[in-house]
Amino acid sequence: MSETPHRRRVLVIGAGAPIGEALVRVLLNDDQVSHVLAATGHPVDTFPIEGREGLTVRSVDITRNRQLHHLLFDTAKNLEIDTVIHTAMHSSATDEGPRVHAYNVESVRNLMDHCERHPVIDRLILRSASAVYQVQRDLPVLIGEAHPLNMAGNAPQWVRDRVEADVSACTRMGMGRLRITVLRMAEVLATGTGSQLYDYLESPVCFQPAGFDPMINVLTIRDAVEALTQAIHCHKQGVFNIPGADTLPLSEVISRWGRLGLPAIGSILTPLYRLRRRLTGHDFRYGMNRRWFIYSGVLDGRRARDILDYTPTHPVDWPVTDIAPFSEAPGGI
Amino acid sequence: MAFSPAIANAIAALFLDESARERMGRIDFRDAGHGYDAFGMHPSYVALGEVLVSPLYDRYFRVRSQGHEHLPATGPAIIAGNHSGNLPIDGMMIWLDILRHTHPPRIARPIADHFVPSLPYLGTLFARGGMVGGSRGNARTLLDSGEMLMIFPEGVPGIVKPWSKRYQLQQFREGHAELAIRHQAPIIPVGVVGGEEQLPALFSSRRLGRLVGVPIMPIPAVPVPLPVRYHLRYGKPIPIPDQFTPDQADDPIVVRETADRVKRAVASLVETGLKERPGVFE
Image (cartoon, rainbow over all chains, first blue to last red; front, side):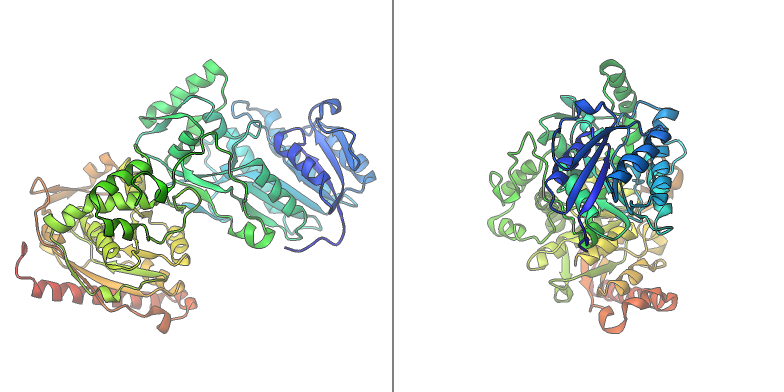
C-alpha cells in the first residue's frame, strides 16, 4: 500500500446511512485525515455525531444536481476537500422509477463530472455491490473483478442501477486527473445497508430452494469501513472486490442467524416472497436473488489484499455462535 | 443440505474405524472460515462420502488399483482418465481410491460438467465432497492453491458412448492440457477398466435428458449397475513442469499435442488393464 504524502480531507456522501456514519466516526479518529465533510440526506440536526472538531455536516439531496454542485464547489472547495467517498445507494428493492435512478446512477455521473473539474478533489471512491455480478452454473464460484456483470435485460432496476453506476465509474478511470476506485462489496449483514440477505433473514422462517445450498460471503460494517479507509490512503485506482470474513453455505447463515430454514420448491418462492412483501412490507425479492440462492458466488478478495492491503478481519457477530467445528463435534473425527 | 456437518460427522464417526477417522482428520484443505472451503467442500461430508462410497468400492465393485506411487503427495496435479459407464461411478471410485492411498489424504477434486451444480441435492452433496463446476476459473483457482483435480477429458461423449464403442476413447478436449501447462501441474493418466460394462445402455435420449436437466439420458438395459470389478491403473506422471513453460499454454499446437499424449497414455493403461483382467466380474 502506498502512503499518502499529506493528510486527506474527505467528503463522505451517504453519511446518514449506517456505513457512511461508521466511516465518519472512524475517519474522525484517523491521524491521516484532517477534516471530514459528512453529506447526509437527512436534516443536519438529526446527524448523530455533532460538535466534533474536524467535522462539518451538510444536508444534501444528491438527486438535485445543483445541490451537489454547491456542495462540491462551495463547502467542499472552502474546506479543501480532496477525497470523495460515495456510499449512498437507495436501499429498497421495491422502490423503482426515475427518482430512484437519479439517486443511484445520475448522482454518480454528476459527481464524476464535478470532481473532474474540481480544483482540489483528486480522488473518488465509489461503494458498489456484489449484486452487479452475474451468477450462473457455468461461471466460476470465486468471483474475480473480471467476472461477467449482470446485464440481463429483465433484471430489476435495483440491479440495473447498481451495474450502471459501477460501469459509469469504471469507464472514467484513467481518463483524467481524478483517480477513481470502485469497491464491490459483499452483502453487509446489517440493517439500513440495502442488504437483501439481511431482509431475507428478518423472518423467523427462511425458505430455501430445495436441494440447493450455495456458498455465500458476507461482510460486516467494520470491514466495509476498513476497506473504504484503506482505499483513501492508497494511490492506486481500479476495481476491487471487498469480501467479508465469513464464507459459508446459506443454510448455515440461516441457522447461525437463529432462523429456521425450510426447503421449498423453487418455483413457489417468488410468489411466496412477493406475498410476504405485500403483507409485511419487507423488501426481499426472491426472483431478483434467485441465482444467488442456487449457485455459489464468493468474492475473490486477492486484488484488494495485494493492492489496498485490505483483508477482512471482523467476522459477523452471529446471534448463534455455538456451532462446533469439525474436530470438536461430538464423536468428532 | 438437509443436514448439518455435525450430523455428517456423527454418521461418519459411527461407520469409520479409528485409523480412518484419524486419517480423515488430516485432510488438507483451505478452510474459508466456517469449516468449508470457498467451493463448499467440508471434511465431514468427505468422511460421509467415504462411508457411502466404501461399500461400493470394497464389496460391490471390488476395486483393484495400482500405481499409487505416481500420485504426488503435494502440489497441483491433474488426474486424467477415461470416462464410461453412463453413471459417474468411475469418478467416485477414483475419488475414494486417491483419498485412501495418499498420505496425508488428498481429495481429487472432480471437475464436473456445467449441468451438475444445477442438479438439486446431488449437486450440493457432490460439492460438499469436493466437486466443482467445470469452469476454467474454478480449475485455475484450485490449481493455484496446489490442489489435485480429477478431469475426464472426453466429457459427456465419453460416459454415454454406446456399447459398440466401449473402451474406445473419444476425442480428448484440450482444457486439461492447457491448465496443466499454465499452472505447471503434472498430469497423471489413469486407465479405468470395468466401468464400460457396469450399465449397458439400450440407447440414449437427448430429449429425455433435457426434461431432467442433463445433456443426455441413457436408457439402461439393466435396472441397476452390474457388479463388475473395477481396475484402476495410474500411469507415470507426464512431467509438464520439466517440459513446458507457462507461456506455452498459449501455443495451440503444444496444447493439442499434450492432450494427444495424455490420450495415448490413458489408452495404453486401459489396454494393459483389459489384457490383464481375467474377466469382467473378476
